[in-house]
Amino acid sequence: MTATDERSHLIAPVGGVGGPTLPQERRLVTEVPGPRSRALAARRASAVASGVGSVLPVYVETAGGGVIVDVDGNSLIDLSSGIAVVSVGNAAPAVVDGVQRQAAAFTHTCFMVAPYEGYVQVCEALAEVTPGDHAKKSALFNSGAEAVENAVKIARSATGRDAVVAFDHAYHGRTNLTMAMTAKTMPYKQGFGPFAGEVYRAPMSYPFRERSPITGAEAAARAIDVIDKQVGGGNVACVVIEPVQGEGGFVVPAEGFLPTLAEWCRSRGVVLVADEIQTGFCRTGAWFACEHEGVVPDLVTMAKGLAGGLPLAAVTGRAELMDAPHAGGLGGTYGGNPVACAAALGSIETMQKLDLAESARRIEQQMVPRLRELAGRYPAIGDVRGRGAMIAVELVRPGTTEPDAALTGAVSAACHAAGVVTLTCGTYGNVLRFLPPLVIPEHLLDDALDVLEEAFATCAR
Ligand code: PLZ
Figure 1: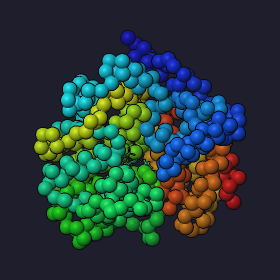
Figure 2: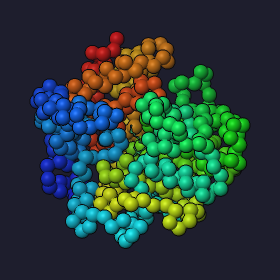
Figure 3: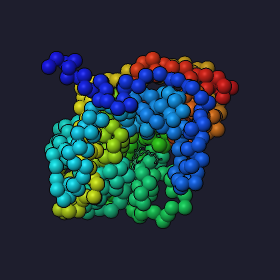
Figure 4: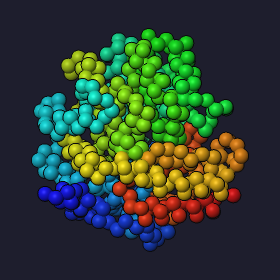
């Protein structure tokens, strides 16, 4: 088999209506939302609980590669990847192929009842791709929040300690423990308490919002001081941190912050958990964002990009920590579902063979200069930041760091109306973030950036 043959099933269609054979173009044939989407919105209003929101006003018919086609036939450019999930592209051929074969063979037995090879294969692959060359083991779950919950269980079991440290602006999920770890009240926590105990919050390194310039090591010392004084290093089971914060605003900590924190954890016997749920699987231009600073976490939580759109999550880490809980102490009915595992194997294979970490770095090179140029023209853009294909602009009142959430919402809505799927985030709701699929063609990303530029021309001064 030649190299091209070997790769062909990763880029060629498997059949069906979605996948990369969908024309990779922005095409609006109705107003957005069109009549069919509006009819579905009306049905939704009486059937779906209103606590569940949606970013886009359109309903999806099919999707493939870097486009989403709605029920009115509009083709939108996807700069969200379903919140960093379909990094290999929507309906990626190797994912679809794996899912179809596995679903036809068996859909579920429960790994705790009757195990199967796919689960083992995923754990073997995770030991290979995650940072560090120590002996590793893994356990599989369904959602990111569930992975974080289990990382805490493992860390507590291994250390015999209770305290969990999370950071300002952190996001770790919506379950009771992970809500306590998540920083932002609205919309995640308001009215949903009381929250789990023994969760403490430390100050983050957020270069754009420091009152005066401070190095990463100094920001880490500030956090460590809070932990030492308010919790006591010897009481801490784990420090949980997103190496680049996601929902909190695509905050890239100052260089030196993560390594200093990692060193402190090691010296105090604290388990360092990297929450790579949003940053993992090539998103930031490396397989895991910790690698940019050579940090090797004790445990890594993963989900999203792992399985190309199927719900699968994992905790991977040092074998001795992973083996700390008693037999039967970890699990769940659906954890490591065989169809999701087949999807993960297809997704990981695609990332390896197409070198999607390199693609993420190319996306950064295509996006950042254009965003910087835009920032030169629109002083409302206070900061351009991110790594790889995890890039954001933070919007402020010109000349200040005062957040401008209204402008952020307006620019994002203008992008949606023009056929580009953008997301916002941030503690102050003033960060416009971009998470394109790593397979997005250059021309499509260029077109999306043109739309963004027009949106600024319309909405900003
Ligand atoms: N940890 C770092 O980014 C999920 C949340 C969207 P689940 N982020 C998207 C929303 O509003 O619910 C996330 C994350 C990090 C944990 C999670 C939680 O992952 O799969 O959504 O549970």
